Length: 92
Length: 92
DNA sequence: ACAATATTTAGACAATTGTATAAATGTCTA
DNA sequence: TAGACATTTATACAATTGTCTAAATATTGT
Image (cartoon, rainbow over all chains, first blue to last red; front, top):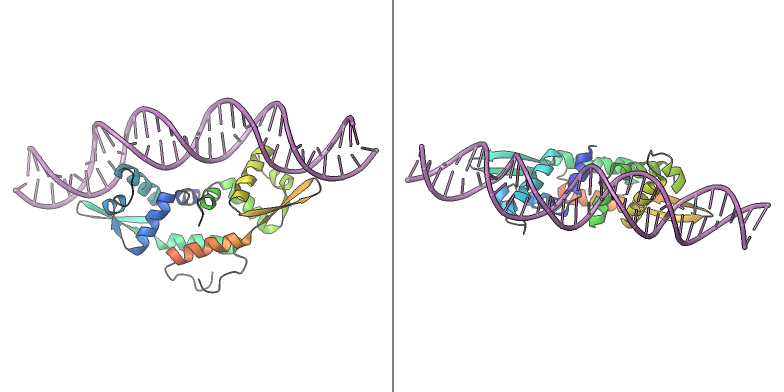
């Protein structure tokens, strides 16, 4: 379980980005316009998320499309379940 | 899902503390001696964990005993399952 | 090749954070 | 009440982080 993963999740803007990507894949611009901060700042957050392997990218012409890496989320869930879970959730 | 929760989890020393508490409840001193940093620094980390409601305390004479608050961990798991789970875990 | 659009990278700066030492608080026992 | 032990709180400081503006890179269409 990598340190960058938890640091990436620590910022509320980044968690919001992840939730946006839950609905559907989006380009960097589509993501950035959802926030009141500069595009460059959102781009920085996207870089953090990508470094933590929480998202993956694909270029589409001039756009870059972001999508969730659900595999990593399953690892997070497993981390909590195995270490701290304490038999709690039969069905999410 | 509170912001303090994720910020609390972002530090590796704090995650290590949580894992120690998985094994058994421990006093502040027992926890602190596991780390190469000053007792006061560990105490600060314990305060962060407590503020995030990840641990609870009980005074025992001159000692203060810490224990995991497993309820909050179940909330974390639920957070990830519902938002990002993507039908992945039949049995963790 | 040039201009327009999309996105990232570089550099600077204020805010937050992790750590340390020293002082304060709380508890026990003589 | 004094002294020892356990823990926290106060204060300071260096490191990290989130944000900004400006510049750089990449792609498309003319």
